[in-house]
Each structure stands twice: as C-alpha cells, then as structure tokens.
Image (cartoon, rainbow, N blue to C red; front, side, top):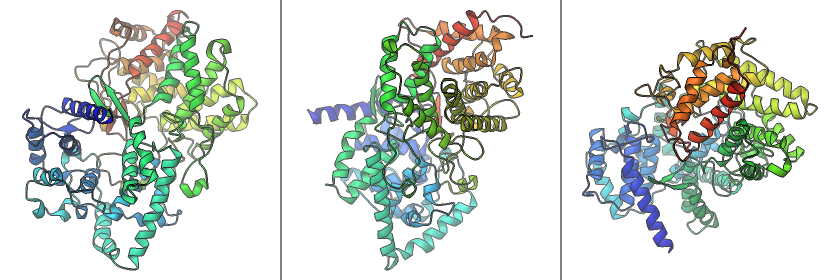
Length: 626
C-alpha cells in the first residue's frame, strides 16, 4: 500500500512538472516566469529521477534538453543548482565556489558572521556548508551517468569546472555578482581550500563540520523536523543521512516531508513553507468580521479561534538563545503551525489582531478569549522586534549591515543576506499594538506608544516621492499601499492631517484602470516599477487591497466612484458557487520569486466588500469631503 501511494504521489509530481513547462521547453523560477537554467535543469533532472526516459516519446524531455544545451548547458546553472547537481553526482564539487564551514567558528562580533544573516539565508547555507565541507556525493547510478552525458555540450571529463564556478546563464542573473565576490571566491578557491586537505587544517574542518551539525540538529528538534522552509528541510535531512543513514535524526525527518506536499487539481507540488494556515486564518477572521455577519458564521469563527490559540508558540527555544542565534519566541505566532515554531513579527501581529477582535464577541459564539498573559507575551515579542530605525523585520532584529549584500552568492534572489525592515511588518505591528492598547490601556503603555511613534516615523520615511511603498511579500505597490495606509491610520493619522496618506491615495488612484479596479503584475516586484497586468486587466486581489487602503483613508468622503467601480468588478467576478477565480500569482519573496496564496482570492474580496458595505454603503459616505 505504501509503495502504491508513493507511486501515485510520484506520478502526480510528474504531471504537475510537465503541465508547468513553458512553451519554449524550459521551466521558470516560478510558474509564471520565463524559462531559466535553474528551473529547467532541476525540473529536467527531477523528471529523469521520477522515471521519465531521456526520450519520453512526447517531446517534453527532448525539448527541455535542447533548451539547456542551447543556453550554455548545466555549467550555466546558478550556485544553488550547482550544489544540488554536485550532491547528485551530476556535477563536480570543484565547479562550486567554496562554502567553508569554518565561518561558523568565527567570533560573532564580525559583521559577516552567518549568525547575523537573515535566518532563511543562514539556514540554507548552514547545511550547504556541511555538504560542501564533506564533498558529499550520492550513489552514482546508471541514471546519474546518463545525466552526465545529457546535461553538457562537451564530454563530462572535458568540462572546465574552474570556469564553470563563475558561469551563470543570463536568464538567471537577477543579482549580478560584484567584483568583490570574484576576488573573494578566487581567494577561497585557490588559497584557502587547498590547505584543508592537510593536517592541521583538516582537523579544523572536522571541528567545523561537527559544529555545523549541532546547529542543524538544533533547528530540526525545535521545528519538530519541519525546518524553517523546504530548502533547508531537505538539505538538513540530507546532512543527517550523510552523517548516519541509520540515525534517528534522519528517520524523524521522513514523515515530515508530507507537511510540504500538496496535491491539487493540477498535480502535486511542494509548498514554499509547510503551508500558511495561521497567516490565512488570521486574515480570514478579520475578513469575516468586517462583513458584520459574525452571527451567521459563529461556528466557523469558533474553529478559527481555536486554531489560532493552539498555534501560538508557548515557550522559547531551549538553551542559550545567543549561542544558537535565535530570538525569543514565547508568545509569538508562526506563519504556519505551532510545530514549525519560528516567530515572525507580522504573523504575531496578525494573530494578535485576530484574537483581540474575537475577544470582543460573546464567548458562547466564538469560544473563550485567549488568556491575558498570553496576550502580554505576544506584545512582548512584538516590542522586542523593533529595530533602532523604528522598523520591523521578519523573524529577528536586523543584525548586520546592508553592505553585506555585496557577498550575496545567490544570483537568483535579491536582498537575502540580512533581515531588512519592511513596511508590511512595521504596519502590522502598529495595528496590533494599537488594537491591544484600546483594550488594555495600562499595560506597558509608554513603551507601546513609543514603539508606535517610532514605527510611524519609519513608514513615513521610507515612502517614495510618488506616494508609494514597495511591497516585499505581495504584489506589490498595491499590497504595500494597503499596509502603509493601514499602519498610519491605526496610529491616528488621517487624510486630513497626514500628507503621507494623501500622497498614498493619489498614487493608488493614479493606477486605477480605465475600466475600474487594479491589476498589478509580478514584474512590479522584479523591476521595482508599477506594472499593470498584460492587457490592463483588473485582478481581484489587487483590487481588494486598493479598496481596503482607500476605504481606510476615507476616500468615500470625497469621491466614492472608484470604490463603486471596484466593488462592481469584485461582485461580477464571483462564480456561481461563491468562489472567486484563481488569477495571476500574488505572493513574492526576495524580489524575484513568486509564490501562490490560493486563499487570497476569497479572503480579500470578502474583506474589501465587507468594508465597502459597512463603511461606505451603510455609512452613506457619498458626500464630498469638506
């Protein structure tokens, strides 16, 4: 039965991979992106490992191989791709730029210490450095030997691996490598690495590898072997297998693979996290409550309330948090589940907002309110995450400097090395603290007011001259505009007393489509310039974000026409079964990689229409602003 289920899952993955292939034969970094070497090689190799032959008879494999060879062969894959192919045995480790594990033994005061990096970055390069340090290679099977022939334009033994270290296809090069990296990698390759083949440096490497594995095991245990994301999940699992294939650590990883797999109507895919249930549920609660229909959906709200309460992190990670480079987590909410456990500023804020709203409703309808001490713990986490500039980053405080981005080795992603402060996280923190202060005005009042004030200054400071904010976690300027206006409004700013809100409204209104509504392309994220969807089509989620922002700013008091047009578009887009259509991708991370939030298509239209009904139509706000 297990073998049968595994065969079904493999076939589902096979189908999804083929469906998402681009017309030119390749695959992109995400499902809407143009073909890249990284996407095409990894998907090609995946299909081959799943059992597809080099000549599949349908042309998919052959066309993908043509794309790879026409664009420079697998030597032009990104550094992450080079690492994966090396582990597989289809690429040589000498063709990788060094990832010395000894960097983890350096003193923390150094700005380049990995403990100062953004947690997603360091948690990926942590296991990568272990695999590089061991030069781990899996079993060389007939399929691997065949891949060595298929992926390269010259015989495998003739590949110039030294040249390949710095080769990257132009289609993949979002973050071009600066000169300082060329000097760094060359120095490590030619002078540093040769020393570690001999004693006593060899002993130092063994010590470094041992230290790295300690940190890997710590991450595994504190996430119940889910890990922070799918990339370091499979890397950590591989490291555990490389350390000891029969270890309990490796065995505990296996069942948690399923946390990441999702079988949908178009096949099986691996998620960018172990789902987003806390994030989606917190938003869904706020959306339902905005409609004024809480009485009709009490049972749904009760279940959501229970889930949010059960998802809160109740303890800090064990041991010396400084030694493990971890922030406090007691009282936080994660993006997904309590098992995952990583604390996130905006997830904590949205979770807190949701439970505070639910606490104002009758317990008989939505369940008992969260204990006040747990509310205090959540507030403590939020306050602890404010940076000196007043902004909020994602998981931790910003620990190093922007210039560290010069050594970003990932050609595909931008701004990954440190945890930057964002308008979205900062706004969410303001909203949560403002909501908390209304219900519990005596608790840490001065600290909360000071925190909100500094956060507002940060949001105002980073607003662009045209009134926009750049969105780092959603597409893009409409998403950030909603957060920017909501944060300022929660702190007491209004259209009348804030030039920043007025500028933000002017920006959003300038992007309204002639037919009404808003439709923003993911290209806005990549190029940092507002870009409409092809054909100037409205998108339900962008339209909802813009509506929510404008309603919050009081747009209906001056001219509700844009809101009426947008509401009409949302209403007319709803399908017979109540669902809204799945349209273009609306999530993003690191500027260049898009992610799907399938629940957004319903959450935000409901939320926008709820606010529109209660705050525009029922309030009769159709009169000009004085």
